[in-house]
Image (cartoon, rainbow, N blue to C red; front, side):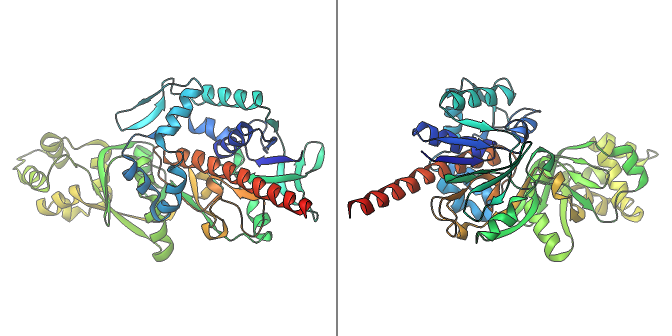
Length: 414
C-alpha cells in the first residue's frame, strides 16, 4: 500500500499523522532536522502555552481577517479539545492568571516525547534529516538526505513545514517555490509576533542603560486596539507580548506608510485627571524625577522614556507632561527581520485550498499550520490553530483517499 507522507514533524504535521494513523492508514513523517518538534520545544522553554481558556466566541476573533477560515478548524478541535488531547497523553494542564493554559510541569518535552511514542506505537515511521526539495517529473517527492537524494511515492502528502521564522530550527520557507510551481498561490511571508525598530533609534544613554528591561503594567493604543500588559525595550526598539499583540496592524501600517505610531499609557491604573492632578501638585525644591516618583511612583525605564521622547519644554509643562504620561507617541519604522519573529504571516492562500485544505491545483497535496496564510498573537492561539489545521488536513487526506478509492472501484466495475 502506498504511504501517506507528512512533511514537517512539528505540531501540525504530527497531528495530521495522528489522524491518519488512528484511521489505520500508512504514514511516513519526514523532517529536515535531526529530531521532530524543534521549534515546539524552544517555544516551550519558558513554559509551554498550549491554548487559552477565554470564551470560544472571543477566542476565534484573535485570528483577525482569517477568523472565519480558522474557525472551521477550531469548531472541530478547539481549546478544550487541546486540553483533552493533552490529558490523553498523560499531560495535566492548568489555567494561569491570564487565562492562558499550560502543562502542569510547564515543559514541552514530556508532551512531545509521549506524543511521538504514541505515534510510533501506532505504526508511524519517522525519517529525520530529510529536507524536501520538490517533486520529480513523475510526481514523486524529492528529499535531500545525508545519503544523497531520495524519492518517495506517496498517495497523499500533508505539507506542514512552518513559515520562515526561526529558520535554524527548520522553518525556512524554502517550500514556497515548489508549491508555486504546482500552481498554488502564495502570499509573501512576513514577520508576525515580532519586534520593531523605533524611528531614529534610541539614544546611546537609553540603549546602554535600558535595552533588555521591561515596561511593566503599561497599555498601548493603536486605533481601536487597546490592551494592557508589558513589553521590553531592545537595542533598536521594542518587542514583547504587548507589542506582539499589535504587531500585525503595526507591520501592515509600516508597509503601507513607512511608519506606524502607537500611544503608550505609562500608568493605565490611573485616570488622566488623576495623573494631571499629581503632576501639577507643587513640588517645591524637589527635582522632576523625585516629584514623579513621589506622586506617581514613576521612575526607572518609564521615567527614562519620558526624557527620551518628550521635549524639555514639555517636561516642564504640567499639562503636556501629564498628557505624555497617559499617551506617549512611539513611532516605529520597521519590523524586525522575519528570522527573528516568533511566527509568520502569509503563505498558501485560502483560495488555493479546498475545504479539506487540499491544494486545488495539486490533487493529493494538503497544507497545514503556518504554511497557510493566517496569523495570530501569542497566548496559545498559534499552537491551537496549528494543531487544529493538522487535524483538518489529516481528515482531508482520508476523505480524498476515500474518493480516489471509490472512483477506482467504479472504474473496475465498468
